[in-house]
Image (cartoon, rainbow, N blue to C red; front, side, top):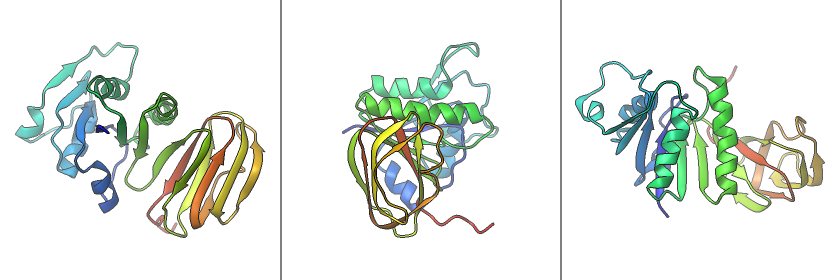
Length: 214
């Protein structure tokens, strides 16, 4: 398996879990995502984008990363271009670091939807901000080794059918979930989390570290 980390421009914090997830991967930065490389101690092999959001005062080793420059007026985001470059280089697994938050809610939504599409096409995908992470759910059964008490939601991108959730505070047994329903928001891991999906498009969004108290 060839794993690539794509550094996107959203929120990102460094955690021991994130370090393990990106360890040994090849790295491509999308425009402002190069700023995360400095925090993570990574040197990308490629830097992609229109370079309208380049961080100031980059160290020489990052400023000299090979660039693939695109015009500002284009029909793909810098993030999607970086993902395309990784797939061209043989990526079979992607860590989309900085996929959430940031100044552009439209880009964050795209990353979620794109992650699901890529998974359907056979690419393993993890979306992460360090504090929370997303895993596309395909029809079938999947297990997750999150600690007890971990908060999670299942985000539906369509109507869902045959959804079963075990190892959770609020289990579900072969239910139908309408698109836009909040039924699967804010659940909690109790034991080993297992999710089975009969039909539909969805994504598991989990908080592997405790949320700060409000």
